[in-house]
Amino acid sequence: MTVFLVNPSDNSFGTAVITPRWLFVLAAATPRIYGDPVLVDESLEQLDPSSINAGDIVGVSVHTGNALRGYEVGKMARERGASVIYGGIHATLYPDEPFELGGAHAVVTGDGDQIWARAVNDCVAGKLKRVYEGGKIEGDQFIAARWDLMNTEKYMWASVQTIRGCPKHCSFCSVWRTDGQKPRQRGFQNVIDEIVDLRRLGFRFIALADDNFYPVTLTDLRLAKAQNNTEKLHNLEQIREERFRLMSQLAKLPKDMVFFTQITMEAAEDSAFLDAMREANIKGALVGVEAVTPEGLKAVYKDFNCSGDRLIEQLKEFRKHGVHVLGSFIFGLPTDKPDTFEATAELAIKSGITFAQFVMMTPFPGTVDFINWEKEQSKNPTLVGGTPITRFWLIPTGIRPKMFTPHPLMSSDEIRERTQGVWDRFYEMGSIWKRSGCTPTFRARVAFIFLSKLYRQMYAGTGISTDSARRKKSKNWARWTARQCRKIFAAKPMPGLQSPDWVPELAGAAHSTVLNHGPDLNNPLNIVNGD
Ligand code: B12
Ligand code: SF4
Image (cartoon, rainbow, N blue to C red; front, side, top):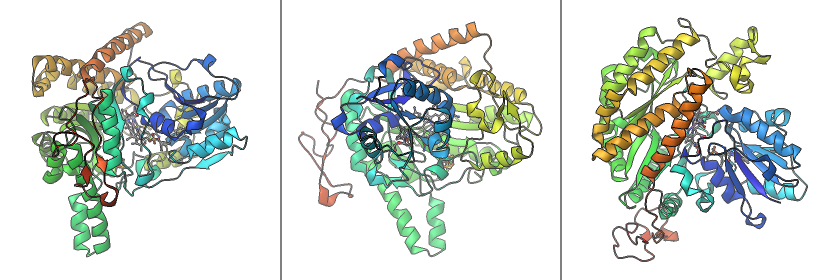
């Protein structure tokens, strides 16, 4: 019996930007007595059906965007006699769907770290239940990924999670509902150990796959103080301290390491936090700007963000502290007007952000936007190819609309074209060249240009591609460029890099590390390069 874990995707580029973390976490959660699981990441290559045999267990992860492909994989595996178990955010939100459409034998909802082993054991014992509820486990129960099973030649960045959950409640986001509003932090020791593992393998670029790396803002602290809520204040301070502890340990890692995370804009006001990020080599962050007008921000329940000149100042603040920003903007909000696109492009360029993504408003399940839209649709349902548009992920990709919610002023096509125009403007050669000035050498500048073009190619999902020949050509270009970019990110492995010995009774205190070996006691991780 073999355990397979499959990350479904319709698009395979041969090389991927970021490791799908769940694959390696669930691999670690698979009981060792069944041998090493086989990991199939379809964003690299498609699963070979003939590799699945009767009696195997196939775990499939689905988020909304890849659910349809996930169901094809599950049905195929079931036909070949395997037991099929689904998990992931989409299966958590719609636990019945994999049974109806994906040939599921069981579904795991919520966090899989702890419950996956039980599902596998039950399956082997012939006692598989229909649903396993993983729930929201505490930070100290998150398990470390099995990076020894990764094909290191295929990924540019590895991903390590330091925290789950987000206290905000943006209308387009499901994180605060599925992962909860209470931040759940991993102990810094576990995070550092995992990163050391990755650096040994030759990964120096790491994405911190967190919902929100900055869970406690200065405003939160001020408010708790003003309310005389000592218990809340203490709790918030503890969460914040733990963040600083983690960053002080990241700062001790080899100096060539680069981290990237996701953060809210409020961090711009927190110089101490940004300084700690710089020290920790967190050199980039995805910042959810979303909209550049006050009305737009209100529409997405994100009025804690600034707009106009203040917004530009805030974005510049990150750069001043050495943190490059990947700004994320949403188009198609009801408050958008035709001139919003131009204004957004202007702002993105003026604010000095290094990368940007311009996504079209999508009502993802589990969000407030989705609930409102579904309610509205129930009065007069729209069908596409017989499927209600509120189940857009089940509509075959060929006929799936690119936008789902009608806009009061603009047609979907107009929004798509204008969004495409903003991508084109931000990533036109002259702009990229100017931005590439932030790199230290000519070689790095060229790499920056390639990366910018690759990013644009992979993530500008406006659906405005022309004939299939051009689509194929651009996919081949992306495959080739992705291979070259991977070489830029690869580092010399450091097999001898030591992880600190964490003193158990002192665990929790930043100064509690003692060393296995090594000459530089003040900088424990910066030692023993194994070459
Ligand atoms: C890091 C991240 C990214 C990264 C890296 C993606 C990658 N290659 O892994 C980047 C920035 C590239 C990205 C891109 C996008 N992302 Co994203 N991303 C995340 C984030 C913050 C963390 C994901 C992660 O690695 N978590 C750590 C792992 C360990 O947790 P996990 O995946 O949840 O898995 C656990 C459980 O779900 C369960 N589980 C998962 N699979 C399985 C399978 C089985 C068999 C079992 C038993 C259990 C199980 O067990 C795991 C361990 O506990 C999540 C937020 C979130 N809370 O999920 C959003 C999230 C997944 N992303 C989201 C979206 C919308 C996107 C984009 C579409 C954004 C855009 N508009 O372009 C793109 C799509 C990319 C793509 N084609 O897949 C949404 C998905 C919503 C939905 N309903 O599907 C999320 C939830 C964020 C949100 N705002 O709502 N993303
Ligand atoms: S968009 Fe970001 S800040 Fe808003 S709820 Fe989601 S994770 Fe939190």
